[in-house]
Image 1: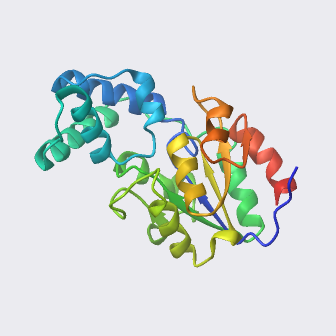
Image 2 (image 1 turned 90 degrees about the horizontal axis):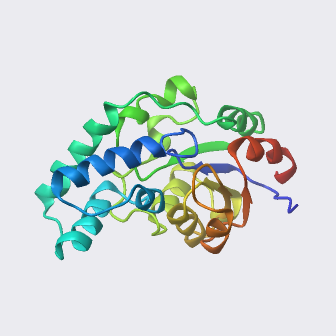
Length: 225
């Protein structure tokens, strides 16, 4: 196993990494599609994880209607998606996530949230579920960047918030768009399989190393660092 030296910050995705929330997101998006007459499968939303809501709506509108979504459509449909998501049963913290965060803090490593989401349903839970780990000034969400994952912008902004260079950080993400984004920002990228995305998909989309679960990632972290 490669051993990293001098790591000062860990930039961490939220949905599917800290929270087992992707099935709820996929179901909520499918409700939006039925409402708006857009074509999609639940599996599409696991592949689109990390994209901003506006970008997801635009992609679906292009695919289904052959045009870009209007700004009003983006706002209205994303608000509807948030309501559908909030109406579902609360999601659990991903097994192993708290232990991973605790290990990072024990080593004095700064933790920064880097998510494509802007939904308060989970953002408002971060402080109670991960006390002190992701204060508002160390969060990158869809509200902070104009280009979401797979563009490097979210992880680059995360580096700025942490005050470190790319060679002093690691990224932890469970989706191909996220691993592409972190790699494009020049960060050592840890992929984690927490859903239907295969390890090979994360490796071919920028991950330097892949673990089969957040629990396995937490187990391996002391050796990796």
